[in-house]
Image 1 (cartoon, protein in one colour):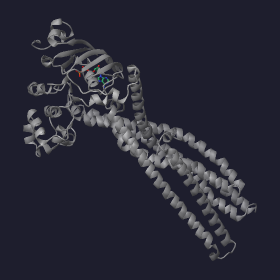
Image 2 (spheres, protein in one colour):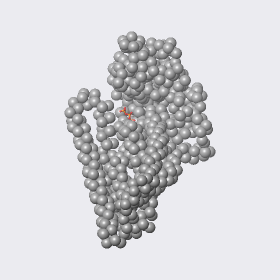
Image 3 (tube, protein in one colour):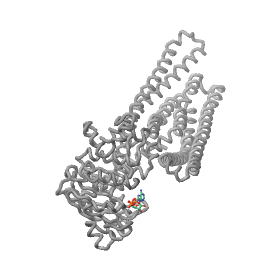
Image 4 (cartoon, helix red, strand yellow):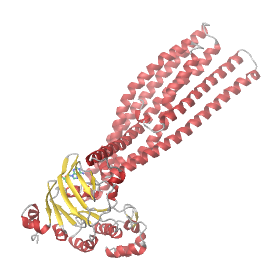
Amino acid sequence: MIDRALFALEGVRGVLAALLALATTRALLAVGQAWTLASAVVGLWAGEPLAGQTTRIALFFACFVGAQGVRCAQDALLGRYARARVEELRDGLLRTVFEQGARIVQKTGTGSVAALALEGIDQVETYVRLVLPKIVCVVAVPLVVLLCVLPVDWVSGLIMLVMYPVIVFYMGLIGQTAKAAAARQHDEYRRLSNHFVDSVRGIDTLKLLGQDKRHGERIFEVSERFREATVKTLRIATLSGSVLDLISTLSLAAVAIMLGFRLVDGSIAFFPALFVLVLVPEYFKPIREFASDYHASLDGKNALASIQGIVASAKDGEEARRATAEGAAGCGATGREREVLAWSEGAVLELSGVGFSYPDCEALCDVAFSVRGFKRIGIVGASGSGKSTLANVLGGFLAPSAGVVFAAGRRLDDLREPSWQRQVLYIPQDPYLFHATLRENIAFYRPDAADEEVERAVRAMGLEELVAELPEGLGTLVGEGGRALSGGERQRVALARALLDRSRRVLVFDEPTAHLDIETELELKERMLPLMEGRLVFFATHRLHWTHDMDAVIVMEGGRAVEFGAPRALAAQGGAFARLAAQVEGGWR
Ligand SMILES: Nc1ncnc2c1ncn2[C@@H]1O[C@H](COP(=O)(O)OP(=O)(O)OP(=O)(O)O)[C@@H](O)[C@H]1O
């Protein structure tokens, strides 16, 4: 029931110690309130004048105000602590998502990661605020109260002592059921988030294929499952809360009835009886509050576990990767020693035995080749042969599961090395436009670019017409929520980015023209070729006319690089490239 993940939070022990001190103080103040109230009432009952009770009444109010003060101090402490931890968690999660990129998002789901970063984080804050003080109160307050009741009336103390473990045992039983129900609810929520984001992203395709109605029904099914899981969790929470209330009320009644009988037969005086009666609710209050907040905070508990899981698995993977890289290098290379030098004419990139597997499929196997300097390398092959996966490995997005890479004199396990990524410009099939102005999108890698440079890039990539058409020219908002651009226009923006940032000397293209009609492709080709000058270029494509402009091609077949060489020589060789070339309409010359 007590969540170990909470104890992994930074500085939690110090906060628990402070909360323990505050809870003990509050319990003592509650005892003080019960004592002063009981003695004032007993005094009045005995016929003492009201004026004689002033000190007791003043002390009662002092204890009351003190208890409120302690509560405020506790809230302030928890508020600060929860906010700080939550900020750290958010940073950790976002850093992991940015560092691990596609891998994390593919594994966990875009919707789920977004829901965790937004709503999940808030749930964790509520969870930390609610549960930390309850963990402390549930131990400290009953102990203080019991220690004060036992010397005054051991019979009531004994009843309280016996009933407490019964309640804790019952809570443990309910807790297990509630935990399972909340975990199921959390899973359904993750599924719903992923489904929703996927549906919104794919809405055009779904409509185009006439699948929107059927997909709508599936969204309804997923939402229904989430609703059912939520109702089940609420049902358990409400029922168990009521039963717990009943048990603690019965325990309270048992103490009160025993006090009543003993008062009647004169075996207990009025003062101790009243003192105990006033104090007993304080004894059961923390466990009742713990039970009700426990259910309310279970989604925060699950969100915390998910976030910590994502961050920890990424960290483990990263450490294992580092350890293997350092072990493989045999020299404990760290930091600077792994930095890839700036790409130059004499630099060599070599892949040796590189493999990569998706959870259910091996996409690359034993890929090996070596390139030097500023070459244009085509990556060709049939659909599913591994072109995009190889482009992703070269771009530093995916870490191979096998093999090593030598890049500009550095031996690496993979190319997710920041000093390599800083040199790479990746242009995918469908470049992403940020929700920002067209100018900001073009100057993405060089936000400091002068206006003339941006305008030159606009002209070079044939974007002048678009800019003239837009209401605010380069200052028009584009991307999601802004003015939509066609596939060809997005591709031109991506190329303008490449033109603007000449410092990136490695270009990785992944089927950049796959979505474009042949006229647009040929027009763009004329604009792309000059960009390739003085750069190392990898160009994954299934359109073989590009290979005429390549210095060499890598031919992929079933995840293996089966051929590597100049296209003309490969075509003459009669192997895999020749077979591919034979499929080109009109032949490959
Ligand atoms: N995210 C993924 N999860 C699981 N398997 C994947 C994933 N992406 C690709 N694959 C599989 O890996 C293999 C190689 O895919 P890849 O996209 O690299 O091939 P490709 O040659 O680029 O294909 P295409 O020309 O159709 O884009 C294929 O069998 C594909 O089904």
